Image (tube, rainbow, N blue to C red):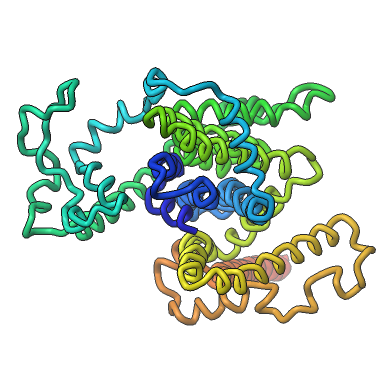
Length: 500
């Protein structure tokens, strides 16, 4: 749960895993066994970004259904993989044992391996981020190591120095960035500056999402969209079509390694799913590839450690890699067993009908659920197990029953072949939808976006009644005109008869 929350806040699983790798490498803060659940949580947290991106298409029902399904297929895979592999790891420790065996077979590490650490994306982003805020990583490291002297110090850097090869600092001067003046001691605290930066970042993210969606809509139209759709979603001919998805996994991994962020890659292709250019079946292997590609950052971070710390750091990075590969072997190898796609389609349909459910899903899946798990784990592992094990068992039972309902309904009793035997609030969001409509009082924003199905249904009913009313008026008008013309014709004929 710590991994989920940390990644949601940082918006990057690569950053979270790199921090965990460094903490394991220190040999004092975390062990490999303790770090494995954290990197599993980081895998879950990374999918929050593309889920937020999908909300940028909320105004169009069909686009939103496809986009949200494309985003949540990543969520579904990560949650299911953790649900299956975390208990196995706790019982058997296979990830720790497998990665440990590989580390033991590698020859002695040396100083030259430190040169393997390359962060290509930061070459572009660092000059821009340094104009906004600058962080003193030394203070963060000291706090993480438990140095009480640094607990009250600000993590915002105010003195910038040039460093020589021997580590000596020269030419020290005041740092120049946007929040330097207000972050001085005695003014704004680190928490206040961080909160303001968070608000600015969210506003910029929303603006960029809207602009990206509008730009893609304007570019991918007509024949161009048809050609791209046909090319991207094409399969290899004949029996080789099975291997098309594995090529997509390699492409997703390669592109993610280039940008060093699975969040950036998946967020970039989510709007394409919403517009129907990229199918959900093709999106799925691309996101699986991004899960593998994002582990490269942790491996590079491991090689950046001191030679005597590389083995432990590299071991946790390999655990992350094998965790994702194991999930792919379970949930992608067999075409008939790919439950994340079914789950994503279900979530897409529900959010298209009840658009408020997207916000609720984000809050529960990425904030409330992880925070509750973290709080229970702090209290006692017994409390955590007592709450989450029954929930996990219930989810597994529901998934099994749903699978049998779709594949072999005759295996179930007649009552269990659908969910109508359950109370309505347990099988439908309609009661909650009507309740929210009453609470919001038909607010303008909800009516404009169509957040609630009850509001959209009410609007459609009103429009239908308006159309029917206009049709009735038009029919009456036509009848009146016809009657008048008929009456005039009769009078004319009478007049003519009189003349004759």
